[in-house]
Image (tube, rainbow, N blue to C red; front, side, top):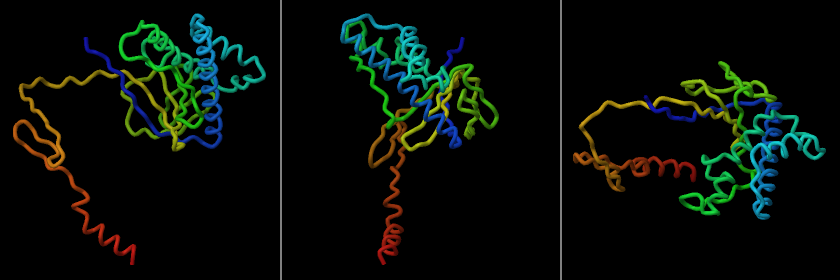
Length: 236
């Protein structure tokens, strides 16, 4: 049986002004749910109380929070990314920054390097929100996200298989992307008895064990005369 691998495919999207507004609202809600839950978890940890389960956190900071005046606007976005935010925060054994791993690390129950505590999300950093099945639909030219709409996407390459989730991203340069994680079959290369070692260097870019050498690229040296002419023209 062939082993299945997971690969990430990332594509540029171009939301309309209205969709950007709705995405900003979504990112803010995801950030607030994460930060509220993290602050609560840290307080329980400092008080040496039992760690809250994921279902308890979702009930406190999504279901019940929507009924309060200070968090009622959480109802204006899809519930799926809010739930996924807490799933990420509490995921067991998969993310090194999950509270479960942090608590186990501090108690000596987890092998390896000490795990740092989770960090609060900031509006100045990269913004993300993940949708699972029922919250998105992939089309030929657009991708639909619940309560966001149909986003124009540039398919730079074809998705090899169907995906069960998609993450919408806004980077620090205010660009928007959709990131898909799909399962793929690893390519099995034909067996061969030939092998070669590679030694990377500075003067010589690479030296192979069979004696072959590849010179280091020197773009500055090759174009120094042209650069001098350009510099002279600009100054004069």
